[in-house]
Length: 289
Image (cartoon, rainbow, N blue to C red; front, side, top):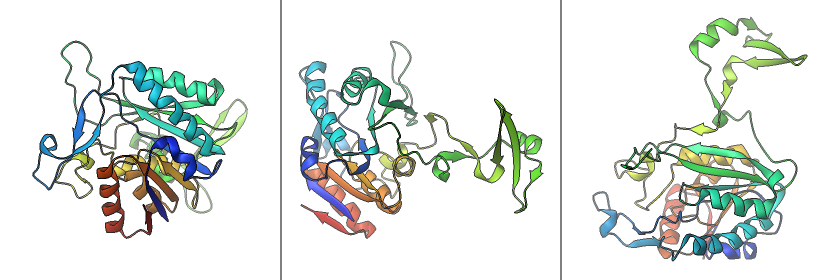
């Protein structure tokens, strides 16, 4: 079941039970300084389309003052083993990290994902910023992390397979063994190796070009592959995934496809309309209001 509410992220506690969410994915406005329009139809331009949301702020301090209580609200609905994934870019990520430390504590910082959308560089004054950052904070001492999920694995290099995976177990699976600090570890060829923290295989263009079915025309839409990986990494089958800035509904669709429950909020009427249409077209049960 997917629950969708036309509501502010600040009120997430009114729609999600305290301490119930495996995962809260926050993809708020980035403090870009413009108002974003949406594409209508396959050939329309976003600049001429209806406004999706306004990302203009009087100052960075004003933006951070708006974000801080929404981080706290997200913290409150997380289960003890749940985690928050905060998705931003260079404009506010460092200051937002400090806010998240204030809400969760420094010891609850689990790491970060560097997402490379593949859009290219536009800067003429220095290194172009070609990545976005997703900060991960856990609610408690232990957080859900499904390390063996195929979404978090990638094939071993052909050279590594031929050199190291020469052992075969009773089931016919190739493996290698390594002894690290006196302990033996077995790695199976068919499981692949764990992904690192730089994700460059989830291009944004898949979600943002009208030539692809996945695109809704909503600005800053994230690719489903990215959210599928996040959902599978940090939530359990049947668990609750929450997206308080659900935008085009990608998180909710990814959660439903992965067998999770989902709750989405957004203050934008266009976001609610876009998400509603997308979920119904996908055939998932929806409670929207």
